[in-house]
Length: 216
Image 1 (cartoon, rainbow, N blue to C red):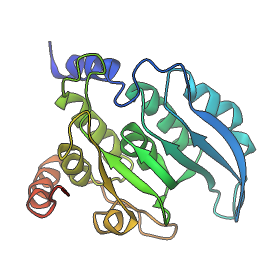
Image 2 (cartoon, helix red, strand yellow; image 1 turned 30 degrees about the horizontal axis):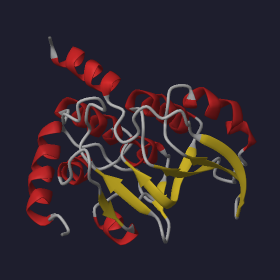
Image 3 (cartoon, rainbow, N blue to C red; image 1 turned 135 degrees about the vertical axis):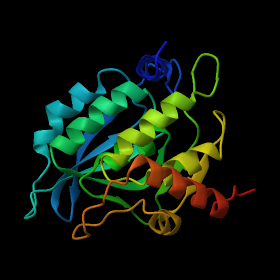
Image 4 (cartoon, rainbow, N blue to C red; image 1 turned 120 degrees about the horizontal axis):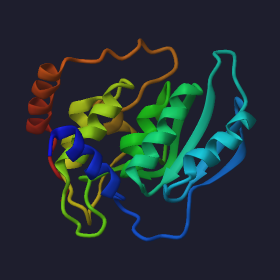
């Protein structure tokens, strides 16, 4: 089996945190300083991308052409999260987190925003991608997620490092201070992130591994 096939299989099996849940992500409209925003809460399951597309037009567009989505999710199906993330990016949404956004929420949805901001009180939770049935860690899945996020300007090395600090049953949480320090916030008006070549991303990861330490 070649690498693309391995990645596809890993993504199809990876449900990260939520396993066998009948609940799905809920999308509601909320008032924000910039008009109407969409709030997304709950686990990510098959069909959520289509649900979001049906309500996305209700979000207000500001003077910069941006809409806003507020994320609060423990994660879920990686492949569905990627489908949802593609629409978030195409529809020019800014992603905001004011509560807990973990697993596929932070590693797939949050980086999809044209801009992404972790608000006061928000937390980002990282862990390794894994098979929801066996709990086996899937490095190919984590790699595919990091590559996917980096195409939207999210720091490849930071994502890989923080994901590696916790296994399937654990979570490594960071606040907005640490998120900013590691390039995980992109504010409106900031210069566009520059995608780094693979070799340079690998060197960045090695540097981060020497500075990031698990919190006990």
